[in-house]
Amino acid sequence: MCGIVGYTGSHEAQALLMDGLRRLEYRGYDSAGVAVQSAEEPVQVEKQLGKLAELRAALEARPLGGTAGIGHTRWATHGRPSQANAHPHTGGGERFAIVHNGIIENYRALRHELESAGVAFQSETDSEVLAHLIARAYQGDLARAVRQALKQAEGSYAVAAICADEPGVIAGARHGSPLVLGRAPHGFFLGSDVLAFIGETSEACYLNDGDSFRMDAAGCEILRADGTSVVPEFHTVTVSAEQAEKEGHPHFMLKEIHQQPDVIRHLLAAYVADEQDAIDFPDIRGLEDRLDGIQRVVFVACGTAWHAAMVGKYLLEQWSGLPVSVELASEFRYRHTVLDGSVLVVAVSQSGETADTLEAARKAAQAGAALLAIVNVPGSTLDREAHGAIRLLAGPEIGVASTKAYTAQIVAITLFALYMGRRRGALSAEQLAEWIRALDALPGQVERALSDKAQIEAVAAEPICRTASHAMFIGRGYNYPSALEGALKLKEISYIHVEGYAAGEMKHGPIALVTDHIPVVAIAVQDEGVYGKTRSNIEELRARGGVILAIGTEGDTSLKEIAQAFIGIPACPAELSPVLVAIPLQLFAYYVACMLGHDVDQPRNLAKSVTVE
Ligand code: AGP
Image 1 (cartoon, rainbow, N blue to C red):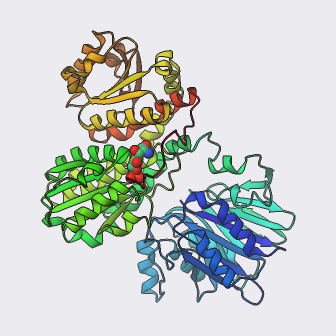
Image 2 (cartoon, rainbow, N blue to C red):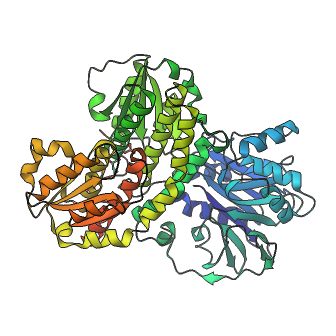
């Protein structure tokens, strides 16, 4: 997720653009840039790798004068963080500059077509194709050129462009990524959200998907997808800057829970070439030639990332036939481990800065193992040090309790397990295609699971959930890690003592804890595997007065009958069910913690990234 800002009016643009980019920093940055126009210098670009301070320093050394411009903070999707990959991108002999937020899914084909026509690319990004398409389509009307160019692009975009031949004009469009216009006494703004200009005006006009726009110092115009021109209606926004960052949600955690369908869509769009039913990871080239020699896989991670790796273990073993182990990084780094070039170590980390995971990864690489990072923050230490990376593309995760990163980690690892299964010939092309179809259905199923939030909130409001001092989560198979993750989610934001167990372990001790005031969350989705066994475990708990909150497959009336509360998830292959089970687990923890009045986004004693040992 990137941040876009634009301004045209009577004031100097640079300062307004930089203030807007500062307010958009929460959208993530691994690089940032601006393009400013003046009568003398129609398109001046400055962009820097790293935080906004780098760009600010460059502009202090070389200020860009002018009263119109666009700016961008980048959250890398295609192409590692670098100055060349930073926006704005230019085209048409540097006469055009564009900024983009989203993913151009068919960029490879477009780039190939443009390069065949002699266009020289400066970056590895998908976005740069837009600069060249707009330059190629330009016939004296920038807004029209933008619309023409976007007809060739597939995917999601919020894009803004300037050109040397039309000083002071900004044109752009949105489809799938947000874009909002602002009106101030001295000019007009655009931004990824109102934060981009909240310091100058609270008069905003949100664009709809399919809308394109043109603005200059005198005014702005919107063109609907059907070509009709409309005068923008500006409304006063009352959200505070902080609320705007949460896009109307009370907490970042709830916002990020709701981002999960789109996060999964972005992952599938980035790594699955639907037309060939093929999976490809552009950033693993550094270790791709070692994969066929791998004889063992070791996951290293901490916390929620470790739970995602646990799900990955089941899938990678099942689909690739490789032996897989999952290690707590804080233990692995001090053990006398046996590693060599036949081992693939997969370090899983949202932040890419967790000290234990970094040291475990470094130990593996020093021992000669191939090192793959599954990481969310582009340009993070782990992202840079690994031999290859699969990025989560989930955008910044602000809430300390990990949610969208967890399900993104599972989906990324699922794709990698399918990729390895196909590469090793353990999966046929038909089997792979079937799994890709099942994954394509996942975002919609997650949306359906999210639509159940009122029921989940009602369950969380039950006195036994709010007043419990202890609680248990149990699950089996692919959802044993779900039980561990559900316990951690509730524990870290409600401060209730919660344990997660493999359901089969209950009889080996933990069942001694069961009473009628300890809620037990039992995960039992219908599958041909362990469902019956888990049901038996539930019956054993009930026989001892256990209070059961069952999470199962919607429509499973027999499970519903033996539980005090039941939350159903859409039917899906058991292998993919941890992603759907995560939704009620996350929402349950969220609502209990809210009812207890805790700081959900910044729970006590915790930090978002544990960069110390
Ligand atoms: C999970 O909700 C916690 N925030 C924590 O367990 C986290 O998953 C762990 O610290 C690992 O962080 P990482 O993914 O950034 O490495």
